Image (tube, rainbow, N blue to C red; front, side, top):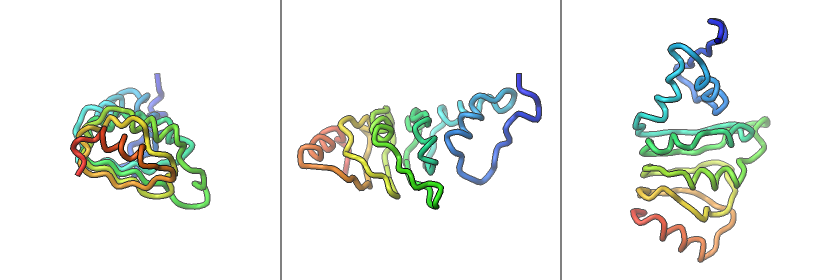
Length: 146
């Protein structure tokens, strides 16, 4: 059992890293259902700006309940490392009802082979590697894309 002084404090008005969300997820008492809140409520907008070293630990099931998803990369000397291609590809493979996606910042990767975001209407991203076959594959998986 956690001691009272070990229960994490919830910041009110700042972005939470995946490590912080994980810490809250494992907290006890009134904090035990914060993670459940993120996975059981519909969000009009979910913004992720995370340290690349902890980005791979995000539970992408939170995308199931987001209408708009924005992925950005933190800036500054400390965050020179990029998000891994494997993590980005895993993110796209998770089921989601997300309708609008914007991916900003230095996120360099190939187009994903599997996209389980079938309700996606709007997608704004830049990729480092893409060819005609990859683009056709993406469009075929996204019937709602405008």
